[in-house]
Image (cartoon, rainbow, N blue to C red):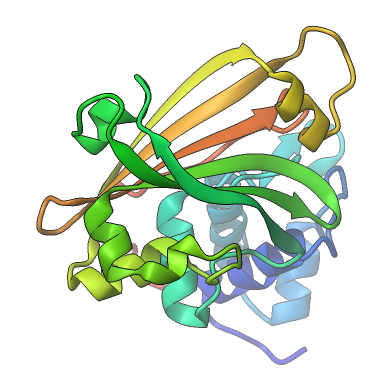
Length: 247
């Protein structure tokens, strides 16, 4: 393996291995000494790479063992936006998205205020099941106002666009600017249990409501993500655009 001088590059190598399933949850990461020898870097650089992975929720420290790969991770929206800009793909390695339903519904009490429309206003919905390495991870229902559908009629088709929100933002001529994420817990519906492979009677699921606003203050999407209790949702969000210098 050729030497590399950047901690970010090393972190990126291990990040991809984790996302692609080559390093499974519970697997022990190489020691810092092994990383130094493998990539020809100082221990401070290897440590910064591991700290980056830890801050992203991809790894955790286990006393007496070392650094291990954490459980399933849901990428935050900033990660997915950056990934799409770099690869034109909205899914991580090993992830698949299956469209369950597309259509028009009346905005309910959860969606209406976040789309800034009156309850019952017709909005478009795309329901899909996201799996990682064949295992259901979460259900995602994305709701779009009429002006988004007018600019992006492809969203009415029951096929994956490879980045519906990104396509809509491009058509509307404004960049994705900010996101509000609200996390709550509730009991799963029978349909949710069936799709996520949950078999117990009363099962608590996590619900993440994500409202994405464009740079011109228009709302491009309200998405409701449902995940079973066995899947841990973790994400980190940059609070500054300033990145530390490479070493």
